Structures are given as C-alpha cells and as structure tokens.
Amino acid sequence: MSKFLVAALYKFVSLPDFKDLQGLILAKCLEEGVMGTLLLAEEGINGTIAGSEAGVRNLLAYLREEPRFSDLVHKESWAEGENPFYRMKVRLKKEIVTLGVKGISPTNEVGEYVEPEDWNALIEDPDVVLIDTRNDYEVSIGTFKGAIDPKTVSFREFPAWFRAQKQLHNKPKIAMFCTGGIRCEKSTSFLKSEGFEDVYHLNGGILKYLETVPEDESLWEGECFVFDQRVSVGHGLKPGPYDLCHACRHPITDEDKQSEHYLPGVSCPRCHDKMSVEQRKRFTERQHQIDLAKARGETHIAADQTAQKLRKKQAMEEHALRSNGQ
Image (cartoon, rainbow, N blue to C red; front, side, top):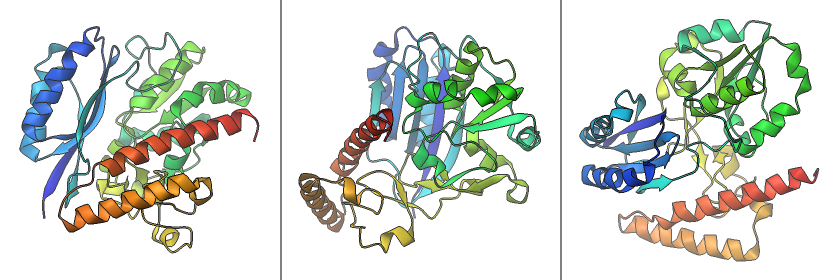
C-alpha cells in the first residue's frame, strides 16, 4: 500500500512580493508531484501538502531556499492508500488565516508559546480560561477537557464572540489552541491588542500535542478534525474513525451512515433538510460520476470542488441566521 507524507506548515513573515511567488511555487509542486493547498498573502504562507516522501522533502527544501522561509517549521504525518488531496493549488489571499481585524499582526505581537509537554499543567490551573479557537464542526468531534467552545462557523466570528464574553475579564490568564497553531497566532495577537496581558497558546497546536504527549497522560478528548481526506486523527496522529459528508463537509460516523437521511455524496443527518431539490439532483449526478470514475480507477476532482462551494454557502447562511438571532 502506498504511503504519502503529509506536511502542514505556516509562517508569518512580511511578503510584499507574495504574488510573484505563486507561479514559482506551483511549478515546483507540480514538478515534485505534490498535492494540497498553499496560501500566500502579504503576511506569510500557510497550507498542507502531501505526496511522496522525496517529493514533499524536495519542495520543503525549495521553500527554505527563500531567505524569509529559511526557518520554516512543518509538522508531518502519514496517509496510506491514496493521496489525501486531489490536486495542487497555490492561492493568493488577503490573510493566510482570515480574522478580519485590521492591524493584527503576529509578526509584531503574540501570546506566550507553551510546549506540548507543559500544556497540561497550564490548562489545569484554576486561574486559566481555556478557549478552543476552531469552528463548531471541528470541536464537535474532539477538544481539550474543560475548553470553552465559541460555536463559531468561521474564524471571522471569533473577535465579536470574544468581545461579548465580559466574564473572561474575571480570570487573569487565557490559553487558546487550534489544529496546527496558526489561528492561535492571530487570536493571541488580537487579545494582546484588546489589552489582555497573560495570553498563552499551544505551540504546534493539537497535532503537535497528539504527536508528543503519551495517550495515558493526555487531556485531549475525542479526535482532531483535519482538512484532508483522513478527516480526523487521534493520538500518535493515527487516522480516526470519521468519514466526511461530501455535501456539507461535516464529519460523520458509521452511526450517521445508518440514518435514513444519509445518501453517499448527497446528504447526511445534519444537512439533509438544508438541501434544495436542485442541489439534490446535482449532488446525485455528481455521485454517479464519482462512482463511474472509481470503477475506471480514476479520481473525480469535481466532487471536492462542489463540496467546498456548498460548505462556503452554508456557512454564510448559518451566519445570517445567527446574526438575526435565530
């Protein structure tokens, strides 16, 4: 069985010429047979890629030849069977992780980094407020014991949510975490700008914690959602038991698949009542094409593209409902 090296990476650094890097990086990715998504913005680089071990390491070496990426740190895991990504994209963005608050820059100020082996002692401190900065569908399958779930649909909602939590001013310390560490760079920088002094975040994120801390010492409960075809990982970064609803992009269990509302590629118990007749017809046809492609031993790339578009649309709809108090 084929094994693919998965590398998650990010770095906040001034890149005023980020548009000029897009074509060069994409060409190297294609040359090495690497797939995934890399985001470039004036504030840095972010993304996850996968491919052969040689291909991924060659690409990482190429990136580090750029002086501003010379100390680029990445996290590794492995996927078996097929590449967890369908294609390669290098996209230009306003932010490599979208918070939507002007003037926030982790290159200027961030919270204090806490190593995975020191994280348990920090979050068990009664004077610490622990906040999960990820979105609701990620938190739904796993989080740290005692963590507050903001129930956000997108990271853009975090600043408004936090400003509304007046009770947090009663605690002297705030600790935050996310999947790989990047959202915490932004969120701790934001809290600093709001006047909070004792702000901490998990260095390397949940993924580094699950890789480093023995399971019998862990305060992590459940699985960690990841943005590729593995869907989730557990301790030791072993792939978890979840699958993905390719309509709404939420994690689903074997129990969900037994539901009358589950149709592969079309709907799951969570999204079945959010689909229009036209969407159901389109997804049904898409799934038919996926099945035909699999029978031919091919990959149907359009499936992932369509699902991403629906996920974005549904996030916007849910945000509108919450804004109206529903």
